Image (cartoon, rainbow, N blue to C red; front, side, top):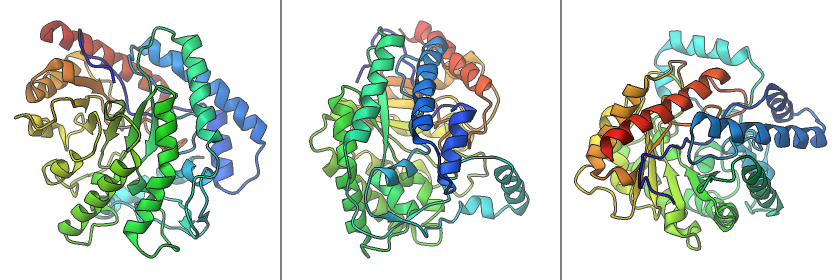
Length: 387
């Protein structure tokens, strides 16, 4: 994993806007409609060829494939693994439920669009196993080909994969009857993706909203201790699945849910950080641009990270159409550097993805690119002052 040796490097969290034709195909398939798979593959190829150079033009140093081949950051796994069936359900965040006016507004927006919802989930009805590594192999090969053609000078690039914990929390278990066994089976299956991504030379980003979000979703009515035990089980499973992946090739993304809502039931980072830092990874990614968690960069002071670890600090909000001023971005980066104590160990990123499920993004496509350009401009300002 490349460090910010001479300047603050820029990256983002994974999902980027998908072209409308691709969103429509993903949404139709998610809603049970038969689609032309060849047409879907063609749209994925075109979208990947479009999204890679857009990142480079915006000034992103560490790009990805924008998750264009996937309908959702974690629901795509049901198409690559056995054991999934119909009949799942997932309750929404408790903070949203507390505000009926906001909830009604949110529901009107969701009902008005063609999209893939992360809350319309399957269930697990049999043993979970990875069916065929060809899918992740092809995704990595296609991204490498497009990257080499569109951005041959890029040194680092990343590919995402979900935490076993977010699948276990979101997709009801009707087979294992034991959460630890369920998480373990998911981790063993996801090992195939983790190792493939690393083998292709990419940084592996593990998306773990479960490590924070689930406190106000599936654990909202249970004691904090129960949730912290869940976090420990997930981290142990991730570490087991990463046994053959170099630590310095992995970054762990944790967030409280990528939605513009109250977030006033979010668990404090201080409650979970010591457990998150048990993950055997080279970088921790956290959202610090949003108004609920911006103050928590201070928790990284005093050598909180291991000497070899980096902090990928979210300095761009992914839920609003405000385009951050580069000076604001620079100041956010500088606060992260002040806490960590070394600019070489900080990378500037976004709070989360811009389209975590196809069509669900709340930021207009042209604004996304403006935000990423502001990220690059702010990183340049900070670099001039820090290096």
